[in-house]
Length: 124
Length: 392
Image (cartoon, rainbow over all chains, first blue to last red; front, side, top):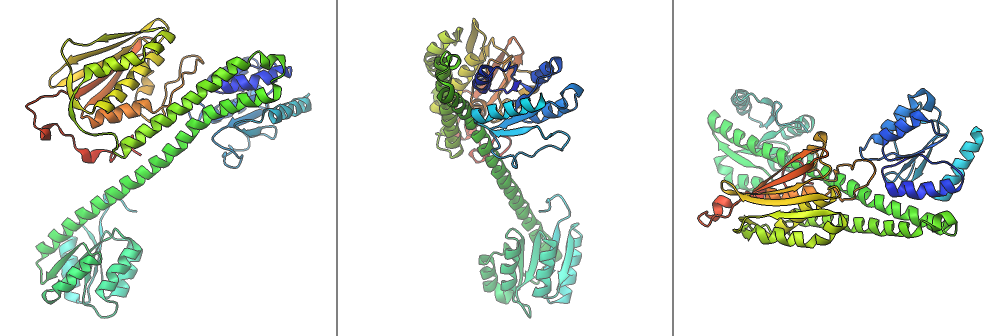
């Protein structure tokens, strides 16, 4: 699942993923992403941290972590505001799990695909 | 830094015991917190510890000289107000002391009332200093915030463009991507246009900040301005399937203002009305003469503005998010620019809106009246850039 309010980012990221054989669910804001994820928990979430509301991404991560069926879904956070993980004040540990990753925007598609492949093959 | 609203603190540095006592008595009556010291060294210690609002310094003291004390106090904090106490014989020195940074001087002997008056006046000066320092810091903060937001605003389209190019470059020879390539290149062009608009708006705002856009308030007819703007949007009108309807009076609509600024104002309002409209929608621009003012309304039949967003509408970088995911691009600077222009022109701008029905932006500008003297019509140019929420 990709959650990002930038239509173009969602488009440019979903095509290579679909080509790779993944089914991509698209959401353009945190609320919609959360709603869809609750209906059908995705295997992995790519989420922009800075959407319309500035805290939307953080809030959505938090919400997902508090939702039983989404608690252990890997979340790959993308952001154009921060370029390094250290700058991005990572939320308390319970929200940031070992299988979560951070990618600065623009995202290196090749690297993202590799990480997703690795993560999802580990899980299965 | 203490707020001036708290108890104001005063340090009195004088080697004469009687002088210290009378200062203490006179000033305590004003509700001030007073500390006295008998020499420069002790005085400087107190100043460093208390960071007082005001210091009374006797120029002639044993030990560190009064002049030295003045410059050391200002090393501690340059906006501590200093009053020099001096005998008649040393008025020349008092002038030197003021050159060195003292705010005022009080010749000995003086009456308690004289002391209180001069201290009151100096504290008033200090409050103004604090206020302007506060505004300065606030502006600095807003400026930093502004830069952060502009960067983010530019980075967003830049990222999108990069993302497309990255995929086109690496997967361009695959069927899936080839099928999309033209569409994606169009999107890239659109996003570069968005970036250009951000830069343009940014420049407009900073020119206004620097007072470079003319702030002249001369006789201007709004009618040709509005009609001109409408003409430039003919193309957009067709592309967006929106009808532009001018409802302007037969007579001219004379206001006081600046031609270029007012063009920018209506350009922004009309562009928004088209952009946030619905297919088949309508944009009506009407003008009417009110009581000493011209009221221009730009009305659209668009998506409307949720009530909770109204308060932020004129803030920099705020954008009402479209329903669904049809991303309406924008710089987020258009309405702040409008607000500024209207304020500069001595008018007001307000918005009425209903979600799903449309919005009306109503601008009121002072009507041009040949009888008015310039003075009556002039706003206070001093307030430009010096106040509230949208300055930076």
